[in-house]
Image 1 (cartoon, rainbow, N blue to C red):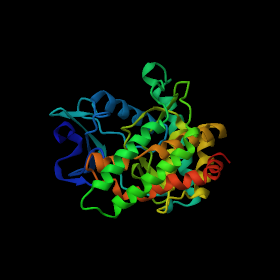
Image 2: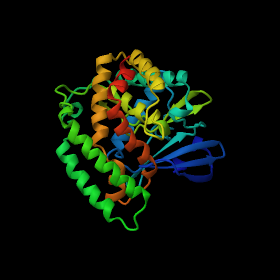
Image 3: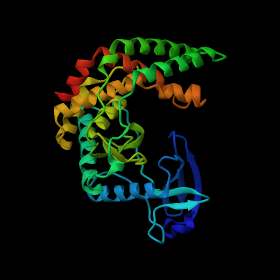
Length: 330
């Protein structure tokens, strides 16, 4: 692999990195420094053309001053190496730490919102207009509560059958029953399917494990696998719901308010756009059980630790709906 990158030096060690749910990563140490070797595994984003598009986007964003870590080019000027039908990319190693919202001050939360707004406006510059069938919101419909009720029944059956049964299964059953009641109560609030194309390029997976900090400032936005066209404001709301959720399932609304104000200013987004995004993401969360699907349908428990806070947030958000919307639009 490294023979394709003669300037990278001779390999000394290659250690797997444990964080990350979809792809494999390695820290490669050489006689000339350290690198991050990414093994693209996700079938939906792991084809060569898609990866090259991501790489070009980060190269162009870097020229605009966005903190990113574009890949290293090989002797042919390529950034993707294909071995045995699998794609790999070599990136410079960036020293830094991941910070959850609880570790950010209000001022740092403001800078985070401004950063995401800058990413969205930067992508608009470097990716060009969002036109053509591939970029339309076809299929981007809100969750049908009828489908969700059926899924809840399936997951309840799985949770109750689990042997040996543990406290996670007990919590899952409680949250599923609770969510069914909430959906029955709020089914008439389902957002309509957008009639216009989604016109904003987004990072697609903006959360604490994809932002590196050095000191108080972000130094690199990582993992652009989900780069695509979606309603931009919804990414801002989703990111806030991940960054600023507390273990008990509440949002730190003071930080959300600072973050959202900075995002709106940097992205040129109005309060009405954020309000609509809040409503759609709230509904999305109310109908979403991806962690339980991983556990009970795929027998994959890597996301289990996220479930207590994520499941509690949907309940709290429903109860504090107006307060949350005001925090994003004030």
